[in-house]
Length: 320
Ligand SMILES: Nc1ncnc2c1ncn2[C@@H]1O[C@H](COP(=O)(O)OP(=O)(O)OP(=O)(O)O)[C@@H](O)[C@H]1O
Image (spheres, helix red, strand yellow):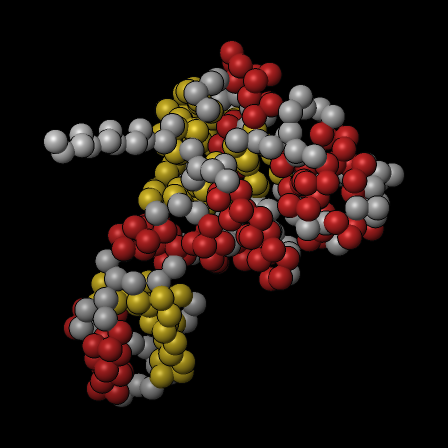
């Protein structure tokens, strides 16, 4: 007799459920009615320009702010009914954490460990963020990257199921940033759910299973990084400028052309096939009697997705 097929595995439980979430501050609508879900074990990234509503959303999820309307459930629980249980199971690493200056790294982690019934050994939390050599250093003596790692150790010491990281790598050098990425990858490997806000597209692309793009308090795009990039219709980008004006109508004739956005004095073109689009663009430039000032090509990123969705660039917004 054929063995009966084993039942399909149950879909992973939802770590976060958000329905109709609204937050108003007097006349400002910071969050304008958003819905999303995050499965356990996923890393979700919230992206958007300054003022998009990311921090407000995350602070409501973290139980630090109350929503004006809507429902939030974390790990199947709500802040109104289960605050104590939720505090035990979630970890927060805020953007700028101030530590008590007289305590060493080890004493700081031990203090935070004392707030929870269960959790990691202090040494384990310190090792996870690779601060062993600094365990006796006072927090004022730490570099920016080491302080961020201490903030993460403090967030991890309760061994949380759900971890919120608010711009964890802002201001870090590339090496420290990558070290933190490794820590976050390790947490995902342990099945932990991570909510990440970041201004770095590459970071979201590397770490996130799901990305939520916000603008003006709304979700304007959602999916895996690959799905979002595929949604703009072409995954190759040409950035170029010419010495004299180039008519935008000419873009439509470029093979595999998808879309165009002005950027500074130049143009950003999204195309499907670089090897067909480039010769077409070069001949269009020369037939209009102008010359290239610069031209570069690259793979489309989440920033291009944001540009396609909103007509604005995250890079430009965040540079301001
Ligand atoms: N406490 C507050 N009182 C009044 N307005 C607020 C308050 N907090 C946020 N806002 C407003 O709500 C909107 C969303 O702000 P929020 O900080 O959530 O955006 P953000 O996407 O996190 O931006 P950033 O990337 O700059 O942190 C903004 O217009 C902001 O000015």
